[in-house]
Length: 430
Image 1: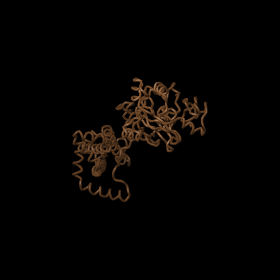
Image 2 (image 1 turned 90 degrees about the vertical axis):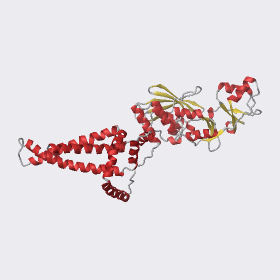
Image 3 (image 1 turned 120 degrees about the vertical axis):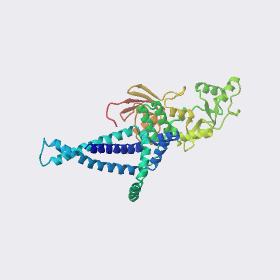
Image 4 (image 1 turned 180 degrees about the vertical axis):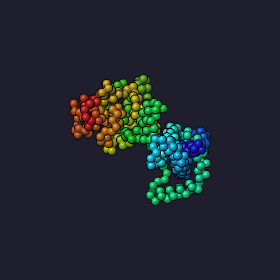
């Protein structure tokens, strides 16, 4: 009996090794393994090679696990049934004694295999998959070499069946932006990343999904100069609006011809020189961007043109806004606000927010933790959301209930929604 028990323990150990090998290879992250391999770790390179061609490895694992399970059942029944029967005979000596002793032996051996050969090894492998995979990789490569003939037979049959069923035989390893954002979120939950770092990573990938109007300064807020602008007017605008650059137009904003840099104007003011924009060649060529570009594409245009300032036009060549590199970076940094820019979302208390009507709907989603806004493809701002829901030009005190919040118009400036009061509602969610 002792020899048979030792054989059962040996089979459990072999099964545990195979189970750990299987799970650790499947759960090992390629990104982490590549970093180790680039650092000179030969075992990490071997694990990566196995992951690239896992067919032979998993074939050996399945052959071993099935063989061990069958052998363990046979040995366990032969080893324990007679002794269990002897223990049970004083309590019961009827015709079902043999069946009962077999059942007890079966449950006991199965429990040993489930606990020590399957459950515990797999949980251990899930905790440290890369480390365990590098420990078991060389013994498993030896097993793959030893069982090569069986592997060739079973792999060939499996490949034939896969082709017949039109099932892919290899795992796709494409990593998407959503995967990276999910990994960053998991890192923030475990404490490996700061929440600010996780938000920064998420915002970077949002640049490709958010279009220019979501971050630009609206048309009516653009401060511009004209060719016929008087010196007094130029001085007043620069004093009241201390921007770095100003668009220059012939008459209105839609007749833009370029821009002037404050660095070119201020020395003239200090030296008392003429500030006429018509006679002095200080107007530079301005970058124009279509309003259909994503923020990532706009960033590339800034880089190619070596500019940090552009006007945004629509399909009718009308100016709809102004976008600066600072606007794009504010989108990435989230809470970064320039000294001359007011916050668009102001939290009044735990249950209410005051939001500017031009606030991008993506920023509102983050502030209020709303997963998606209905019809979000039809508008860019919270004002657009209200107009979409109300199906009219809103008036003061008009309100919308959505996702457990009440959006109420509190200030309107010439049909433009200036301020929206958002309060968390306790009632039913639309």
